[in-house]
Image 1 (cartoon, rainbow, N blue to C red):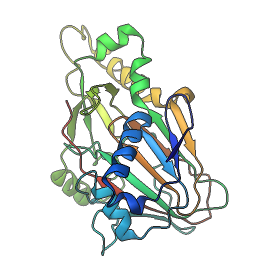
Image 2 (image 1 turned 135 degrees about the vertical axis):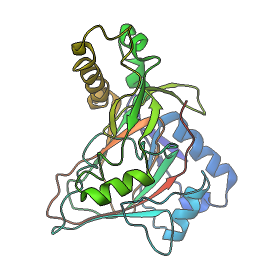
Image 3 (image 1 turned 90 degrees about the vertical axis):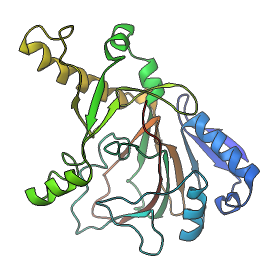
Length: 282
């Protein structure tokens, strides 16, 4: 396996690898997992694998999860179909910097995404290294956010455009999750800046140490949250991947954010993603 690093901070292409082989080859799978922890997102071209092989490879990382809003393949639970058509409204939550499903109490560990069909140009996906984003923060900001926790909501994102009864039903099934603003990666021990487009507010900001008057809490907390979320926008922390059919991206959802660039209408774009169940945050 040849490893070609794509940027200084994040991303590598794995060359000479067939993911179908890694379903049964423990040594090859261990190499891929090691590269994933090192580079946070790894890419492969020319992976003409079946849906069953896609799911079987992803399951080597852990059990898979379905998505309550996006549709899954009926024959392969856990394989979410992200299909875009020219006559279909564009999803408003892909083209925002986000970490998948942080509205869950235990967000996904990672994802394996395969391109089925894509436009001849456009429709790239970008990833950001949120360990580097944390490390790059000023020291006074690190001190300020060390003990902060924040809420993440499916109701305020996927549910926002639903009729109120359906939206409240979605929230009842998936109450807002609370996570530390600075997460510790469960495998590497690194500190990760863990706020994104699903984050609505800090849940423990309003204390006597931080708030003298109302203006300290609002807009003070909101401005801090927006500043933290904006760290994913910094190009030095990013990698951009141009899709081709049968290209695959595997990313560590615990230490990255990603953004699907929607510059391709009215073309088709069909992607299939297997999300791996993760751990509670600490």
